[in-house]
Image (cartoon, rainbow, N blue to C red):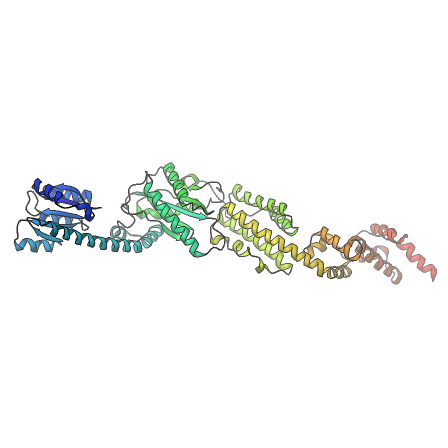
Length: 529
């Protein structure tokens, strides 16, 4: 309802006017009465009425002087209707000069006054719509100017009602982050969620008992699709600020799996110092993964808590993760991933360090795929894993994303390995035939071809009816026999040339296969000549 003040030095005139019009029927309520212009000025300052209906001739301060004083005090949103028994033209001239909406003569015609009220009501509606539209355009730029430190006092004075609170209160910046949105969701869905969350946040602030009343709906700023910012007045008490943060987190929960996190900056004395609170909220965000179990992170509680932007995951954990990936061992892979995520929390990884560690894992996994002649573009989860920072993730959400990616990689690597096993075992045998004299082993060959060593051994035995080690030994002994027959090399020289590091071991293995030592084999050949 729009507010009206009735001003007349005659009480019966005021009461008669109050009862003459069905005010509520036309969207108005009589909010106060005054018997002279001075009392009316006090009421205007306190009640901010939409319309003042006033007589002209009154003691202390007459109606026209009261209107002039009201305008000088900046009460420009109040509209005035003069009711007078005087029809002198000079009063009408002055009334027009002061911007009076209407000048009605006594006795009041009920329908004439109603028509005047309807006309002013429509004008107020248009003005309100225009003001709301201007505020909607002004709010984002003013908010950004405040948090960037570019706002000036004259901007706040010009837009003193834009954010709904006086500029000289203490303010805190609240960053509300919507984590764990579905990977690669449509922008429209994300914006719809953010809009729903913004409206819920505005209601939560309006209903918070510790927050002063707002002259309009509290403004919620869209920093992006997954982050909303608020500047909210209140006391410097950290407990109250955290309680409001928890209230905001509950309000922002959309019931679609997203996880709200709230980062609360320190109290700043006035809107012009809002950047101070904004920067401290961003500082609180640095503890996001270190304090993964907390919904609200308050700057005062984290002021002395350092996070490490240069921390790296332990080589053993990284190696175990990739080994579990290559061996298609889901248990080992998951265990290594959980150890890495636990380190993020326990060793207080800063977000930059977390991003570097995740990138290392993602590129390590895709590197294995590419080395095995796979096409990493076929991985459906790769874009989400590479671009995981495009939408914020909680530690649990990051685990879900990475586990899905690593599981898909492991399955793909296994299929590539099976393909190699079916079509390229001959290439592996050819490699062994060419390099048997080197220090090769089943494990080294398996690593070269990105296969599980046990699986390769089984595949080799199934294909060639001989175990890998036996086949390599046969090749080495055959070459040693050739050199014993055709050269004058010493036994230890032949041993080294066919892949034995220890001459005595060579002799033992030769005798195991040929039932005689290398020397006896060579002497037997000489006796036949």
